[in-house]
Length: 214
Image 1 (cartoon, helix red, strand yellow):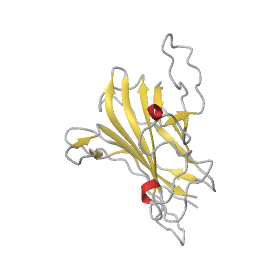
Image 2: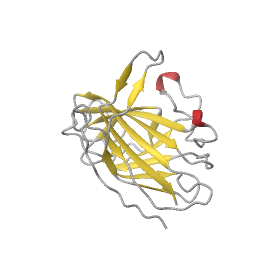
Image 3: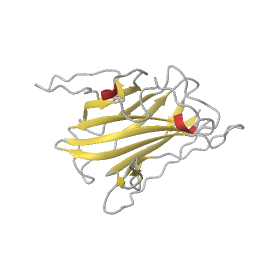
Image 4: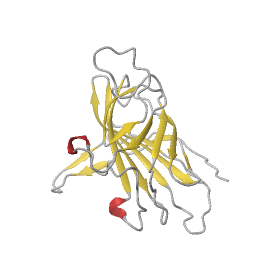
């Protein structure tokens, strides 16, 4: 049985808030007692009605790969947010977007479900670590392929660290008995090093959640 005592905290880092989905669990696996799936949600930029985020799923299990048909990630929006567009992943259902005229969002569901894109996806629809059909190897056995990412543009959302709202009720589905995820926390922003290693940039906000094998 899995127990999830989860704590919330809101540190400030350089006057920027970082949203992190993070849960702590007590679980026992003789082969991998501390293995987990970590979900990171980095807000990279603000838009007129929301933000652009990169979501990365890390497989920190030692021996378990996430195999075909791959991962499925879901959550519930805090208010009436929508997904305008995505790269490296897609929502499985568009939902009811009838309140929009002209530009129609990629997904209007209150509780969207996202999957990875398949290998061979056109380059202009990809981001780093995407498009492997939801397959993620374990960090210990193949660290180069132990993460999966997608990008989404969120609308009808907050446009600053003060007004943005944290998604809740994260779910991670993958082959096997399943995972359970903890709630969101606010933590220090992620930092990113450019390919030439001459510049470091920083996310504006970040979410992190740990999913533990049931």
